[in-house]
Length: 99
Image 1 (cartoon, helix red, strand yellow):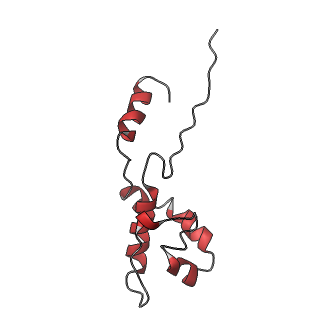
Image 2 (cartoon, rainbow, N blue to C red):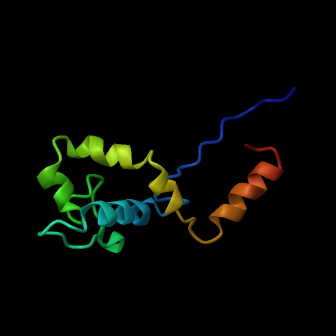
Image 3 (spheres, rainbow, N blue to C red):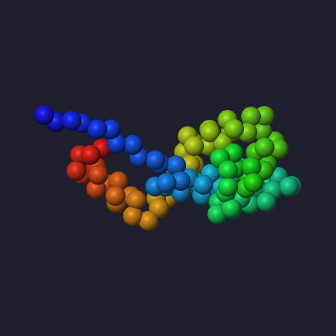
């Protein structure tokens, strides 16, 4: 008898550097604002990115929705980087049919 188990992989800022990708989107979208300061993903400390992406909170009607939307745009995936060894680990699980 085989018992299948679910495998959950935490993606966001666990196996990929989503903070760096979000910062890149923010920097590109807000770079022409007079009060723009580039986001430094290394200083990210809360989910809402308020400390490193303050212009989202200043200019967007719904900052939380804006940030959530960033996670689904092509620029997010274009700027996404795996943390060291995570991409190979993911591929290894896939080759073993564990995913």
